Length: 406
Image (cartoon, rainbow, N blue to C red; front, side, top):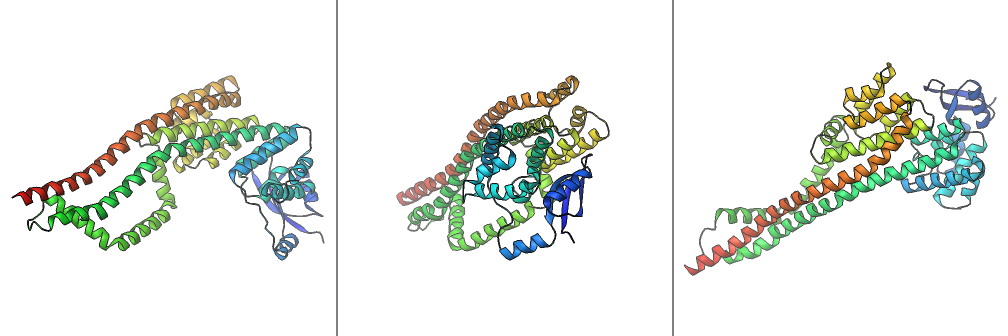
């Protein structure tokens, strides 16, 4: 009796089929699925292979970071462009020995040698290759332009990594101001205020109201610091648990696209991701509906995901993409105009690609402008907080001196 393989395959209409098939090996299973008009995405032996892996005690997947994904994509693109076949390119990368990329190439080559497509092999070997990435590779395999797709995918990953770096970099300085300002406030309340309050002990008179409040807060923090830490830890745990709920994510993500300042960055980043990802998929030969589904899955904002889901349903019913995006409000009017021009000219993929190049520069300008506005606001808030504490300490000193002179 031949071994059974559990498979996940893509049909001609874009639907995903799952089931079980008996074949001599993986390669035979892939060929049998191809004769049925199915493109294999994942093939796993149901009994024998799983048991052998458990007995060996080895890892079934390879964990790599985003930088390794980009490096693997760039190297594979270069090797394929030089004329090597997929298995030969993987064998060349396998020479890296004990590195994670070498292990990744080795495991992938073993599957490719058995007849598994590269896209399905990468999906099996490492969870770090998401569905969007693997579908782009599958499009390259079907069109015979895998080296071009690899190069385009590497540029796309570099661009998205650059966007994340820009947004993260814009938040570093404001975060530093908040943390340092909070730490300074705690030091002043718990250490400096008690030192200055000693000056009032010899006067025998009632201190001013602001001074009494500051000293009471200082005493509470110094006496109940452990309770404050427990409260903060519990608050963080509760907030972390609540942040994973769909209701919280929906309201939080809706807030991100409505708060001034944050809204501009969120919108600009989403538009860039939408144009770049959709353009890359369409240029790779992926149908529009399938590309929209993949773009929706790649978006992290739940509110925008819902808007894209509605737009996808409208396009499926025969509507234009520009009209669907306008009705859902997922994109601004200028971005919708770009999509309409691409649809009218029949060159949507090319128009999206050129527009995404401009949007990268636009995102940088938005981040610079918003950061320039946020920093003065945070400085004013920190100045108000620290200034209030300094005024309290100075008030203590002057009140003490005036009482001593009476």
